[in-house]
Image (tube, rainbow, N blue to C red; front, top):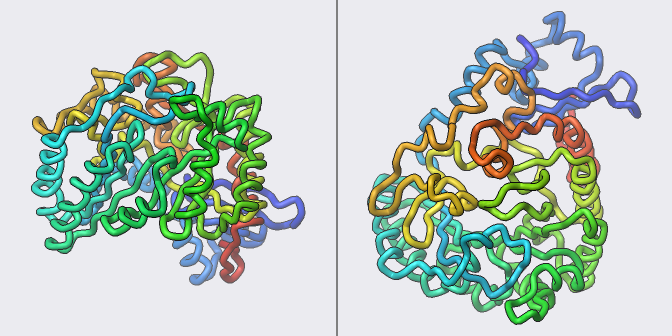
Length: 437
């Protein structure tokens, strides 16, 4: 047996003779004593130890074979893999955020009823009829400006899925101003499984960065809705910070607590920096949920905000196997006029359109440079399962084309151990003999 390629090991200064091991494939955290490491290297583990460490992803029979399996991980066709579609209902919004990444292509563009009907029929015939579960994310602009379309799409798909014995659900990416309790309760009945809402710090900061089109602040309206619905809809709370204001974001978390928000009823909290506007060259490095930055201030900001989030009892996403949706066969963006893309940010690039509801999906391997990460260097990197080439949008913004990986090694070298230790401190651990996972 051999130690996995996809393993990070950190000494424990406060526990001499112990080592913190993290499998980037399994997301397992294991506390290994020096004598157990020695037994691994001289092949003297007992059967129970070998079985446990193999199950947790620390040991493999052949590192070369493990890397080859990683090379083809997205080529494996698993039965009943869900179809995940981001459905762009409109590119309009009732807010006027100055940093909106959709600025270059937003406007009063709405999906019409004919496109919605074609969407329902396509998903019925090509997904539900074949027994494939369906998970939609309604997106904008502001998707709740198209509430009638949400009903027109989710109701028949839910009924068709139930008839065929197939799972169906949908979520929302919404600014939160229109997601009242009455709206949430209605949508839960249609299959709503969660919503992502943005709060850009305390009221004064948020109202500057996310005002209504009229100029009036939106903070109080969003906070009121979060308070009303966080017990009935799983919410992911996010926020977009800058170098100048990120240290004030914990004030917003304190305000949530004072307002009566129960952290245990929030699905997750994740803050990210303002990103460059799509379709325009990036002047610097920034970070989204799928990109990383190598600027020291930004790595420090992420760690600081995650710590402040956990300290207050709110959950934060744990590091886990993660990949850009470009790599996933069953993940798709469906634009308001029926065009297909592999990322919402790609809607600013006509050359990255990959088909439509009328045409079907075309071959995008060359246009999206699909095998960029299948190199000896990437396959031999312990961080590969957390990255798989990083964010294609960040490469596109930097270089004007998808011609390189968005390597995250420098980022994870700085933050991963700290994030793991944060989770052990605040989000608990399960114990096994001679290990802590």
